[in-house]
Every structure is written in C-alpha cells, then in structure tokens.
Length: 300
Image 1 (tube, rainbow, N blue to C red):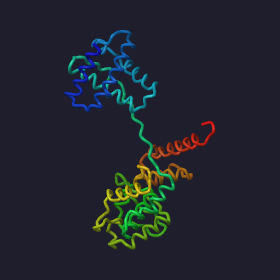
Image 2 (cartoon, helix red, strand yellow; image 1 turned 180 degrees about the vertical axis):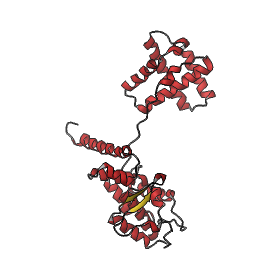
Image 3 (tube, one colour; image 1 turned 60 degrees about the vertical axis):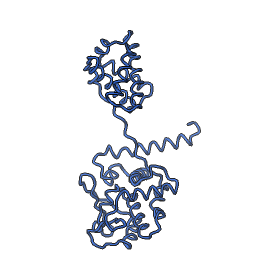
Image 4 (cartoon, rainbow, N blue to C red; image 1 turned 180 degrees about the horizontal axis):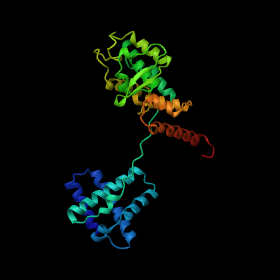
C-alpha cells in the first residue's frame, strides 16, 4: 500500500501541482522516510486507516528524529512541507483527512548572520573604489559614498536619499531618515567629512535641495550604479562575493562591537527598532572568535 501511495503522490505532485523536478525528488525522499518511520513506529504496514489516525505526537516524533540526526530548522521545515503536501494529496485523492497535522508548528529557519568584511577589506573599498573610473568626479563621488557607508553605517538608499542641504555644520551629527521615516542622528568622522568635501568640489549643483550623490546626468545616483561599481572593484581586487554596499554597514557595526562599543549605542546608530536585531552582531563576533580558536589553538 505504501508504494502505491508514494507513486500516486509523485504523479499528483508533478502533473497536477506542477512542482519542480527537484521538489518532487526531495519530497518523494522525505515521504519515503516518513512512511518507513510510521511502519516502525506503529509496528505494522502503513495503510490509509493508519495515516488517518496518526496523532500530532506521531508527526512530532518523526520531526524530532530528524533533529536528532542533525537536521537543522530549514531541513525540518522542508520535511513538514513535504508532509503537508502528502496529506493534501491524501485528502483530495484518497479521502483521508488528518487534522492532527495542522497542530504541528513549523520550525523557523535560523536567520543567516550578517556578513561583514575585515577592517582591511572595508578600508580598501572606502579608499580605493575610485580605481574603477578614470573620471575624477566619479572617483571622488564613489569614495565619498563608500566612506559614508562604512564610516556611518548607512543603508545605501539612506545615503542616496540625502540632499546637499542635509549635510550638518562642523561637529554636528547627520540626520538620517531610515525605514518607516524614522530619523536618527549619526556622527560623521573626520575621514567621512573629508571624503564628502572632496566630492563637493566636483558636485554639479550647489542648490541645497540637490541630491548629495548624483549620477552621470546630474540626477540622483541610482543604487544599481553604485552596486555595479563595487562589483567591478571587488572582482578586480579579489574581494569576497559578499563585498556589497550593505556589507559596509554590517562591517561598521561589527567593527564597532569588536572595538568595545555597547549594543544600545550601535542600535541607535544603525536605526534598528529592536535590540534583538543588533544582537546578531554579537553572534558574528563569537563566530569569529571561535574560528580564530579553531585555527590557532593546539588542541582545537
């Protein structure tokens, strides 16, 4: 019976649900494992009656066994998706419904850690991004932009939405408008101010309402152009694939934390609504510490 159910499920998944071949293959493997588990778990061959009377605890036991075998949250979530699809097939084609499955919560996939650059890599981008262009104005603009991202932790869209008139007077902080129109004050380091001042010598428009960073035609610089220039620089200099404008923001936070800054201050500088978002940077610091330990400790 279980072989017939698997065959029917595969045909239904591919033909009716039009699932990708990789999905069909993976789900088939998951359901094969589930049916084998049910057979061992109940001590009998799996049939429609068995499937209709399984309890939430039975489903949870299968997921728990996967966890014990080393399956992470994302893998367990996929297995549960396969199970939901299988029981949807049973309900539509075999008339078997089991409400117990709906009581099983879906594992949450762990959010990946922000990928920061090393201090040398981040400084290289901020200092040398101008190598991408032969035009002096573009060189100054790109250096100013990347220096601002790394030196103040701005998102690329936050930086590109700034106007000339937004620049603060000497020693004042920059007012940045972030997500949800929430404003925050970010101090500007002397190196950031110097890079922006060098760019302003080339700026085509002195109107305070003009965009701070302009494109080739004088309008507001498009984020795609800045990202493309950094990709070119990254490829030319052998930087990692995660060397992006947003990685400079991550590097800003990570390097501040490594230097002893407290989480609350970093949260305010980044404009995070929740401290839990900022706390992810402590995981990066711990991960880097463990990597150093594994590589250097004689008993690692």
